[in-house]
Length: 104
Image (cartoon, rainbow, N blue to C red; front, side, top):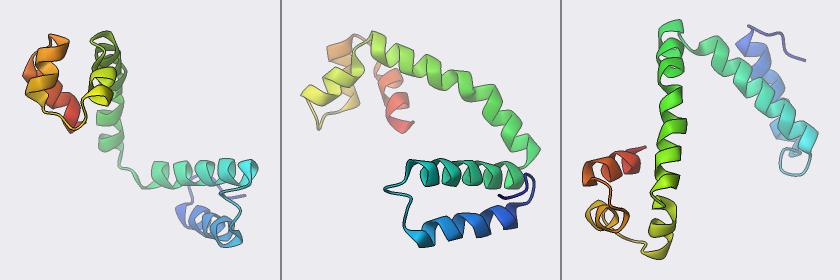
């Protein structure tokens, strides 16, 4: 088990799991790989970047809620490929809002 705060050890352990080829078929190996990759990310990410991410993370949930409320995903599914202008017309939302969703 890798030591929290030690990215090199986590990378080595993740490499071992990957070389075993068990990530696709073994739920426990997959869970351990995710845990190790999160540790690597947490170790390497700078505090400012993490703070900014935390500040804006509520925006993702809010954006998803708006997309569900305007039934955006169903409209995309029914008329793919499409444009933000057509989606705005079909959902009743502003085109700028739709284009912002597309960039996320």
